[in-house]
Length: 393
Image 1: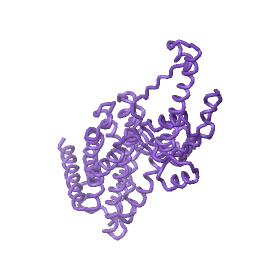
Image 2: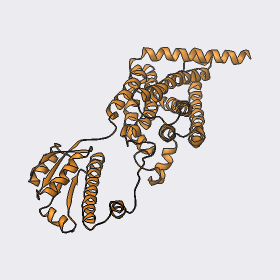
Image 3: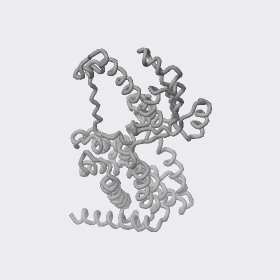
Image 4: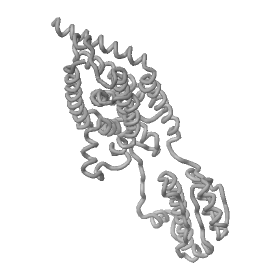
């Protein structure tokens, strides 16, 4: 019993020592504390609007009749786009588009009204930026809705002229009544969708960078060697190893609470699951990231190397999480690589809890995967530190 208590005291001693060392390192302070405060506020502020509206668009109405002008008014009435330019020259519109003064061009051909009155198919041209999916979707969706509504109005007038009762109009115009109900993200907000995965990735990457900087600094001070001092060996390298891990774990559990509870409440991002479930999922995610970072940190010779490596990999890890592209469509090698990253399971699990409202039992596969990664990285990193403790100084 005394041996266990002494070991626990040694772990607490090294945890306090590591926290003291972190506070003295301005670079690590910047990564562990300043970045964690600024990142969520920055992302939340940028994505707070959630959806694009009033996107500037140009209209070229070559028909310029009462019918075509009515359609233009319907387009302008949409909350998604705003008709800021009414011109006759397509080249001029193209020039405005290339200068980013407008984000779409809508054209109505000469003879538009005649075709409508004759019951022929009239044409509306929609030119939108396919290189930017949000702009493309916004302009095309607004134009499609306006066009369908306009067409339904024309058809309704013709049916009424034929004597069709008003009670039967909608059934003939639209035999199938489509009721669209977006699930989980009712507003289609970009921030609601992107904030949870980005915050998970922030936790992993800041741990990898910060702990990597600490490892690189250690080698810099000892001329390229990773030295475990005699004091640490006497007190127990394993206590030192676990004490350091404990200090990182405590810091980032507090960071996780700030990111996934306080930030989401402050910026009114919807949370469909419970915060306690999210925190339970993040325990193994943070532990796996800590042990992975500690393992890798022993191989850095300079503190700047971790920042260079892990800043570069952030976009790759986000892609591998399956947020921007379905995992099912990945090549086999990328599927395998994605499974060994804590961020992959952390992001997928937190999305299900925060956005879908899933309970812990419904994300058990991700929790199991994260605890498995924790065990693997703990074993690998502890063996690495054991190896280093056996080396002569």
